Length: 161
Image (cartoon, rainbow, N blue to C red; front, side):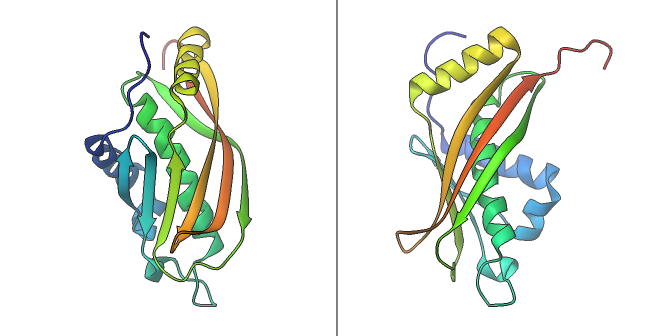
């Protein structure tokens, strides 16, 4: 792998959205969409109506799922062109700070170029690498929830399938 991995682009966001809807049924039920995919990171959104709890606010499980998907999706985007790589969440933590009463919006910032390069080089060298990521759930420019997680990418090196 040579050079620094490029930042994200909107076309990649559309490919990610299609992948999520095709392979993760929860995404369809939550009505998740890619809001932005650019040099700042990945932002996913979902309508409140599809993610309500009994109090009329966003269901905590939906908030955590959306934040985790934003981070997982960012890893997927970094590895989109890597063959036979699997991505799993190894550890996660969620803090709920305020209720969400409007569209659910989760943003995962793109890690610095050096961290991205180290992650990809480690995967090439060891067939396994991990990346720590954070996502915030925002409403009206206020952080309502914080997610942190460790994501592991591994290449299946077993022969014979």
